[in-house]
Length: 349
Image (tube, rainbow, N blue to C red; front, side, top):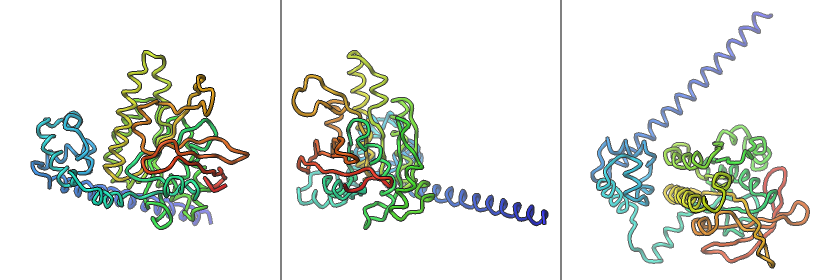
């Protein structure tokens, strides 16, 4: 009897190891195929040979669209190629993606490529014009317990849904700067949307950062991971926590704002270059000088305000209700809605 049990255990272990080995080989094969495909696409650009294509790929430029919106100086610095060569590559990439003068009618057709991710609340989706948009940065700002992290958790699951159900059939990358990410929180959310919890968790990639320079480095390295891992939403929770802690006092303000500006531009290029959604949460600070209206202001000042596409301010309502208000958006009116935080994510109130 005990021999049979031992044999069964050995067989199970062997089967598990074999299955794991096959999965690893399959993943490696897919990665190699994807790398080869990207390099072949880059080599179609005039003046780009295999060696240059490999340099571009290894520096995270796995998209011609991303190359088209990069400055020659930055490309030269990050890849080690000459600035003149970088200029030629960028000009060629811009021709491919047709970055020239277009009519508003043609631009409207381009805008149709923008897709949206449901937040789990129809009222919040309506406030945002249909959900979290791709090719843009969406900011959720508010004090503690207003639902910023809960929205981020919900979106990391809903992005996995098929497009007809409000998702993008992709994966999420969660940059956790405050230690608030909880994988167990995703389990009931996944079940609510009919997803297998284990599979859903395997499609959410998490990076815990402990400093502003690590946070910025993670975002820079994302360029080569986004297409490989099928990332459709990048979540930074929260955007300004490290910058706020490390650069204190008026003497450090200029440096902090410059770094934050660079970080946001990196996120902008990722959002547009890969047509994915970028969601950031933000802390707030009280402004004592404001006697009327809301004294709370999102951290980051004009640098964040100018670089973020959609700004949503969250506040507490009655009981478990939260209120979301559009602070700034290029195509949406200033309006507000309510939602609740449930055990299975964000829902309508």
